[in-house]
Image (cartoon, rainbow, N blue to C red; front, side):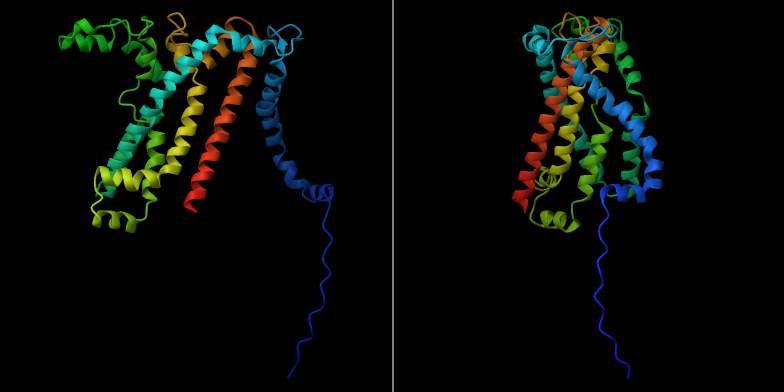
Length: 312
């Protein structure tokens, strides 16, 4: 019978330093170097330009003159920015409801279809509009809102011609015309996220809820909504960021008019640089928007962390 010799103490290999580890993996880093270069030039360098340019007076061509915090003082005293921020808050308040509620209702209806084939068919039906570029949809709704456009023609055809409006030319309704475009307001991306969240609900939970009589609206409010709360939190955060960066719709449809009734901060930032050549002031506005987005993101993470702690 042979005996196994006692294991010898294995001498630990000394850890490599940072530069030694980089040199050993130099081939791998060489292959991903182009990605880092493109990322640095097209992502981080513009951020550096915006941060440094926010403290200058620059027209986009001549040498930049350092002006300190003057651009930020101007921003906080700019009445147009106050109007734009108010418009953005109104747009965000209505837009969040339109972005979440219809998408959640459609996700609920599709999820509770008995046929899996029917679920796939309806998912495809609601996702199909994603292939249409956003600019095409905006131009289409611009035609709908014209004085001789589809909306006024439909009102004429049902005898409601007294309700005809110049939808994009009236300062009292122009903003709301932009907000409520896109009927029936079903965001396919949000619908998919919520549908995936509903699919993640364990079947035994749904069965237990059914036995307890939690059906219909009671099931939605007591079971579905609490269990898809992480998906809802993600959607709300993404939508808030999207509304803060909202530029294309007001730029194409109204260019902020009539007056400043549809101006939002992102559009004012664009106009300051492109239309008026005030690149320094535009960069200051971009920095303020960036800080707002970061603050909201941190707030959302804090709230999500507290919810997870309560569940744990």
